Amino acid sequence: MKAGSNLEKVLSAGHFAVTGELGPPMGNNAEEVRHKAGYLKGIVESVNITDNQTAVVRMASWAACKILIDEGLEPNYQMVCRDRNRLALMADILGATALGIKNVLCLSGDHQRFGSHPESKNVYDLDSVQLLAAFAKMRDEKKFLNDKDLDGSPEIFIGAASNPFADPFEFRVTRLAKKVAAGADFVQTQCIYNMDKFREFMKRAVDKGLHEKCYILAGVTPMKSVGMANYMAKFVPGMDVPADIIKRLKGVDKKDQAAEGIKMAIEQIEEFKEMEGVAGVHVMAIEWEHRAKEIIEGAGLLPRPVVD
Image (cartoon, rainbow, N blue to C red):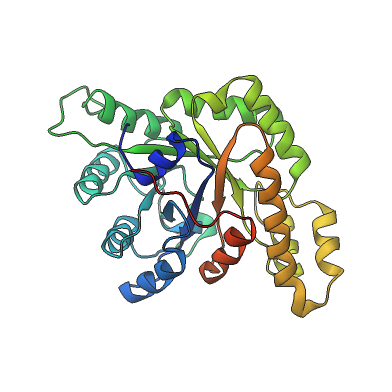
């Protein structure tokens, strides 16, 4: 065990893992975090806490992670390279592990021009691959990036993100391999809608043996409406929403489109369960935490396994 987190234990035991996601509030309302956490308790192995997602200022990820721990849930601390230099990133992971956080997801972060403060300056002192390597060095060698010894042992289960649909597609698995080589223990993918393309991505990953070096969790985000599907297809970079998804949602009454979106998410998970190399799913029910259980239970993934 590298960190002994619940997520690591479930994956190591060979179970099909489930992670969830919680977006912190755009304020310091701890009760909102507790309220959302209540919907996810007992139905996932760990909960991703986003870090100023879409470059919009929100409660600090580490703080929301601590609230989750106090509520009896296991967090997955998301960290983006956009907002911190290497000093802050290393300091924050030391502080986070001191608070009991055992999972971390290393991300580059959405560019600030898309967020609430487009005039802000980004940092990107490290990119996501370098951040993975830095944290692996801190855990495995107990050294900072400057090769100086650190006091203590930040035991962390290190995660990375992967987008199978960004251009060029031919580079996607190579990019994943770089993250695995840098130290990723698990990978969570972008929301998946183009199943044919994802099957090809997984085939290439399996051919390279990447599924034997890290755990790959497929990203699932239910569509709430035709409007959401059209927006994601047209305006969200790196998102691949096939026309037949939009056509299927248009084919049902507007009041039934959310239910159809959940049905589609369940069907996806059923396919992922049978797909070679997929070790679990990452359910990102964006601002829909209260409906995550419908998806997970509908896919036959409850109750969750208990691993000591």
